Image (cartoon, rainbow over all chains, first blue to last red):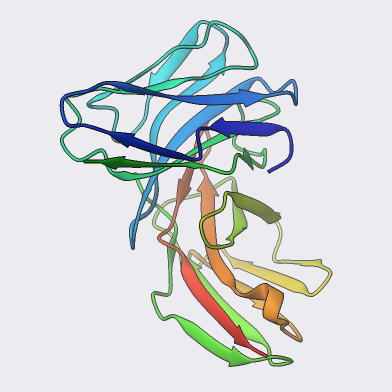
Length: 114
Length: 111
């Protein structure tokens, strides 16, 4: 998990509320990613960013939003439009936005909607 | 879209035995990577094999890649209790700056 921090570790939200998950990296990596993990479904890509002030939708972007104002930060907002937000959220980064690079993961945030 | 798909069978083995798991994919790839995830934690990169490589070793890990069959295998030799985890394969595709992860394969090593 070194170099990438996610907070909080556990997050509880009431239905209808927006919530923002934090992801910070001190690895000087260009690319950052957000994944959602549900039991038995592996990792699904929500959003990714290859450079500051730029980001692209992944496979399941609906109900989520991101920003990339600083190289080291890539926060994810789970909006009330996300119908089933309870999941484990993982942030990752890689040195360059290229497919040959390994990704470094944070410890994750477990979000539960009450 | 998901490309990597591990053999869905969960694996339970005795300490000291070898563990093998497989991954198949559908399209041409640039590279294939294996990751480990301990329960409730983030993923840790294990090994990357490029499309022009057939076999790669890292410590007790051995990865093979067969591009004609669009499949890869991960072998863990002389398993330890600490190897208990879920193992994911992920594929990188030419011209696409993202990885596609499979669903994972859970391995339990019994001391």
